[in-house]
Amino acid sequence: MNPIVRWFHQLGSPPTFDRFAQRWSRVFYLLAVPVLAVGLWQALFVVPADYQQGDSFRILFVHVPSAWMSLFVFGLMALYAAIGLVWRIKLCEILAMACAPLGAGFTLITLLTGSIWGRPMWGTWWDWDPRLTTELLLLFLYIGVIGLYVAIEDRRAAARAAGLMAIVGVALLPVIRYSVDWWGSLHQGQSIRLFGPTTLDASMIAPLWWMVVGTKLWFAGSLLAKARADNLQREAGKDWVRRHLQEKT
Image 1 (tube, one colour):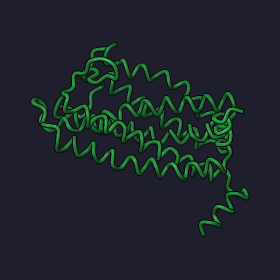
Image 2: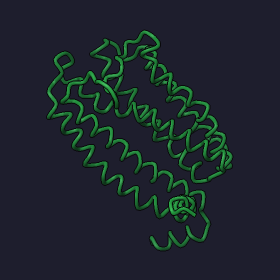
Image 3: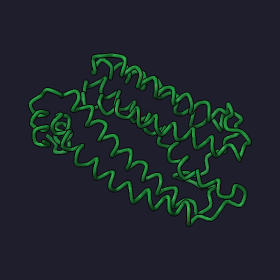
């Protein structure tokens, strides 16, 4: 068997995943803290004030990474759910359900920071703008996945039902992404691209990418920590869990 395939196969074992998640969640957290600190410091103290928006524009360094993460996490959740449904891999079901509260958190931050930013720019805290409305629908989808997972007592049946909802809901992601282009919108168009020109000032790009990388590192650590907790809960009563708890005490 290919070593990489063997490693992934072994990672599906609950005790192996527990050790992996315990070690690497800490690593990701430790990496995320200085990256986020550098990004925030540059965003607050290095980047000059915008000539139109003044200092209020600085909220974009939290808003934009959170918005990207809200879409990324939902897509990842749907991918894990699809793998769990097709190949009945319990670890993928656990990872999919661990994504839901984290993605909901990023989506809520996106909506709150967007509202705070929109108040001085648009003169209102909220507008039924296509981008805002579809992002709110995304939050409701996250809540729906979480609610369905909690409502069903059998953990594996709950994960499959909630995972199916996530797979269907992934159709909303391109609507959110292109809503500004498809409909008239108060929300500004895409300002930064991985490939192609960007409308952001050059001084804003570096701190924004620091924040983007930092949020992904923080998410990776949180995902492993949340999945580990769910894995331990599902495996409660097993010999390896009892030995683990005895070692801690």
